Amino acid sequence: MGSPVNKVFLKFYIYSTNLWWVLSSLVTFYWITGGPAVSSLHLANWMQLDLLCASWDLRADSLSGIMLLVIGVTSGIVSSYSLDYMYGDAHQNQFVALLYIFAFAINGLVVSNNLVAVFLSWELVGLCSYLLICFSKRRQHSLKSSLKAALWNKVGDVSVLLAVGCAFELLEALDSVSIVLLLP
Image (cartoon, rainbow, N blue to C red):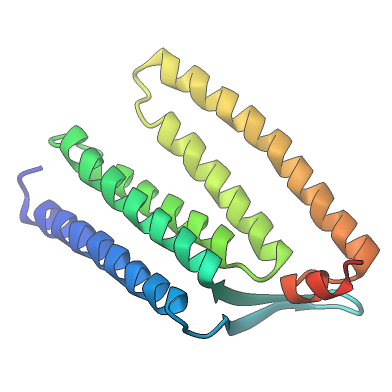
């Protein structure tokens, strides 16, 4: 823990988490006080088949702004606690990296405009939760709990995958705008 690299990494982690908290607060305030109703950003197309177009789009509105704020605040609190909790642990950087990936995946769930991206974010959340729960491999209880979490996440994975398949079968669309417009 005493090396300069770890101290720089931890400072970067603290500052970037606090920056995310401030930015999500500003974005939420902007939307609540009369900003644009919806903002979209098209990043790329994942695949283009006959009827299936899976694009990587981000969509934000006032509700997702509030959720981003909640995620930012919660991530800040968890990161502050975990830095104290894991202080001096040889694997603290790995734990912090898993927390970052977990927060990224949760944000992906909130701002994804495509059910495929939602499913992939869901999968990443499940993987990170498993890895975070079983992080302390010396404790038998954490290993059992991580297996239980993985089992229940797989039940959720199958359910989400079935929902994505049903949405595509019934509506022939995967993006949230088309789904909302096609629903009766």
